[in-house]
Image (spheres, rainbow, N blue to C red):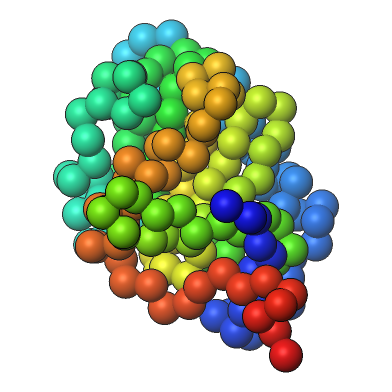
Length: 178
């Protein structure tokens, strides 16, 4: 499945500078690196974490993800599986990404459900953020948990995301823009 860039008219503001995207990714890496080995996983809430759709995402999230048991989190609109550095974290209510040149891919589960995700990686953490859905959802997957297919977490959440948060835009590539 080819990765595609995501220019869009979803937001009227210009793309964030690469430096800002790297800073955001660095914050996620620092967050995951500082998780406690046991107890409540400290996760910062997204700005729209109180959106009722996020409550549906959290309540519908599975008990297990990538072989890891669900853990308690510190913030509304968040879910975590695992502990310590091997923790998968979902945050609902994050800022929806605007047009970007970051990799964007449409993941389709075996039943045909499709969700577009922007994919970034830094320091062994893969960050997948829904594209074209408000509120947006991001999932942080350490390579140590899923070295060959970190997108499996996004695939596992695809049906719930698609049923809860309707798509209002989709990834497009250079061949899709006239």
